[in-house]
Image (cartoon, one colour):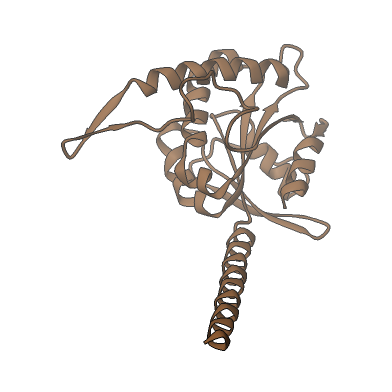
Length: 236
């Protein structure tokens, strides 16, 4: 009887170890298969120009996108698939939903020069991204990239972060009071987390970082996307 119990315990221990290894391999495979970096943002934020700098390493004349642009970012041993999706309100969510399952990271590009005027639209778009269930489940990395920092009147990343936190907190309180009827049932809209505390990026469930850059529109102009590249290499 003692011998039977001994072998039974050994078998259970072996099964637990085997299942742990299997689940670990599945997790690693799923993570490694997510090589996508989605560039999102409002129209004219500079996404497509940043895309061309990352992929082609040079200036390419850009136009308002009506479809996604896809290219490979290669730096040393690192490889990521960069996906630039249109910023137009009628298209942005369609393409975002198509690619978010493969996303290792999201780069939310902000026009630092027109940020105050665009705040409501930008905050609403960012809110929907941060509250997305798939991104939360996959623990997707988020970078808020403050573009056009070469402009004298551009707001810095510290100021943009503070303003966004206040606007997202307002949206959180507003949306938490909203309900919608689905098949006769009442359900709350998506949330950024605990409504009892003010929203802050520091305490948010996903890793959200800020960076600054500029990708000049002039063929002979300079550009600086070093902070973006460092972030890409860190999460690759």
